[in-house]
Figure (cartoon, rainbow, N blue to C red):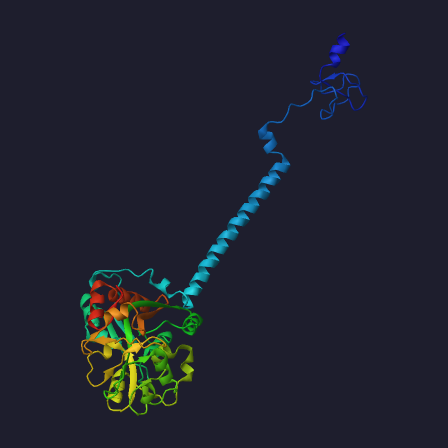
Length: 393
């Protein structure tokens, strides 16, 4: 009875003599006296209790599984971060390629007066570009800027060949000869690519609306021309006014050189290389007005600010492609711009005017930011309207 009871208790089996009645508290075999191997217990030792959930979580295979899941999660998180950054870079590339120009205006702030504009740098800054910027200067834009910020001075800078224009202004801006320039169209990808190659970006901000106004010699009295007819005039397909209901007189097309100005690009687009050899190139709109007024059969065009009020030429009504619904760009005997037609685009040759400058981390960038913010202030937009443009604000 005692032996059976004893065998139901925990014991240690001696590995030397196989004596199986050593109590669990023994360190030496009670039979042979040799040290007991405590790690080798008899099958009479009670079974271990079931593992708790803490023990289960700490088992090797669950630890490995947890580490694997953590690794996968971190990998996914890094991938998402990489994709996000890459998408932001791509978005900047899209904006810099000209596909999404409006992104450039997001950090432009609107103020009531020029004096409210902060961070205006001190110094003398060169500007250039389209000759229609002279209308803004004549309306007192730069005088008002200097009055609000006395140490912010602006200087108009012409190209060395003395042939200013929107395209020349962009070239000079890329060559760091200008702090900012006025431009009459959306920049092409080539300009953005050149800027990127030179280590900076270009920023283009719309500041006004205007219209391309065609004008003829006063003796050319026709109802008007459609856009496609105007294109044919400058491509040499229409050569006599009688082809469009006018007198039997050769058409003499006159305009700015496409290497200097953006005018022909705005009219002909991708077909600008098809310009007729009959076209006579002049330096600026002022010269075009003189040339047309003294040339029977002459026709030219330019921004409305320099043409409004001219009495020596006849502004031409324009219709959309393949239409005879002619719309006058100016009203009240040519003394006022047809604002309604330009705003609602019933006049087909409207455009936006932009200020373009470099994002290069220099003081020129600060000058560009300040110039745009002052021009877009309520005070600046009043001057824009006074100059003959249509405010965008």
